[in-house]
Length: 70
Length: 402
Ligand code: HEM
Ligand code: SF4
View 1 (cartoon, each protein chain N blue to C red):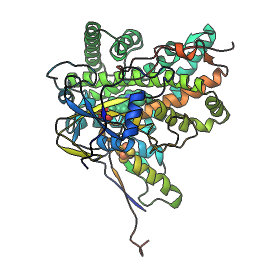
View 2 (view 1 turned 45 degrees about the vertical axis):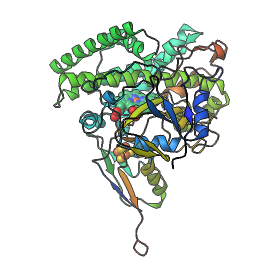
View 3 (view 1 turned 120 degrees about the horizontal axis):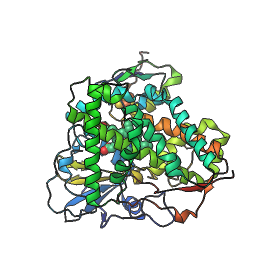
View 4 (view 1 turned 180 degrees about the horizontal axis):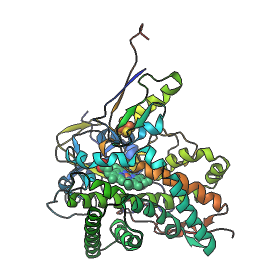
């Protein structure tokens, strides 16, 4: 799984940092999403998926790698 | 598409007797017919009422639906005739669209992050313990609203913003006047003017002598005094009333479901899930409105440009297609996202503060008074009318074994 974030869309609600703290944080000054791990370990993937689902601004996108690549 | 939708004739002004936590029966009934209903506003303007979880969520995320105040010319229950509504005053970004909304929200985002709010945990604990001590010392009975639910969020938001301690009491009374849904128009205007005047002075004071708080920090940006006043007003209004109602109504709900606080006492790790479930179950910020900027298809219906749309958050948070047994309060539920703080670009800015406050306050209250119970029959607890923007109890008489 690969994650991308769009800080421009982010409205700093913090749902990501609350839901998947291993994967997301917020910038201490401006509150924007910070992506800690673009390719989260297996254990953190469910939470990352959940965070993308609850993000109110659609700032988090997930992609699955092409079959064959890793 | 084109199937003729269910129509709701009038919006309820009260809840079913004996069901203080459930959305009014008319709204639950509307949702049963489908997630979107026709609603004709008083005065005859055709509009819509959305009660289903998925549709409410999608409208909140859809830029074709505006929050702009000047477009909201139709009140859901009162016919004001054909009035012109002025745009939101500078800084009051709850009722603005992009790009103006971002001008105000962006500089605030960094002040309300998960991390910053968690750093306030200890301060919330101190304040909570102080109020519980005072309740214990005074002895039972007590009104939980004045002794506990109101002061904790009020102190927190005032400290964050930088409202001096000695001004807090009178200020809170004024804000209460325009939130309780029962104030006469005359008193409303007086309370609003007094609050405006107070905040104008406060902003001027922060500009002259900056202190360590959000309002002082904002004097460092390009925001004008007028804009700062508006920002302060919505932060205070939103921060004072909502969490206070969650704490009081939440305590009421827990006392009516005693196995739930017992579970929380037995398993403190339940606290985070408990807060989310109380948010979902109570949905105190119960309805918000939007206006369609262009014709938009929603749930198989065409919402015509200019139509007012009522979004029923509390009904959506009881949608059986989203939540199993939606009318059951179950602190163990993994509810996987609710709409109590809204969704989309206006999603609650203060939600992480509210979470920290509730996360501390509920367990502390039930931990300190294991025998806490209502001091009056449940039917005697007075509720706010449905015309209030935020649902809650007017007072909550409680007692305990001293
Ligand atoms: C449990 C308590 C709370 C609830 C249930 C709640 C609920 C909400 C909801 C539903 C919205 C979205 C309105 C819309 O979409 O039109 C909102 C917005 C907002 N809330 Fe809260 N809120 C709570 C606590 C707070 C606190 C403590 C603050 C103080 C900092 C706050 C500040 C705001 C602000 C500034 C907005 C406007 C955000 C925007 O328009 O971008 N809220 N709140
Ligand atoms: S949940 Fe979305 S909007 Fe909120 S901070 Fe994270 S990325 Fe930004």
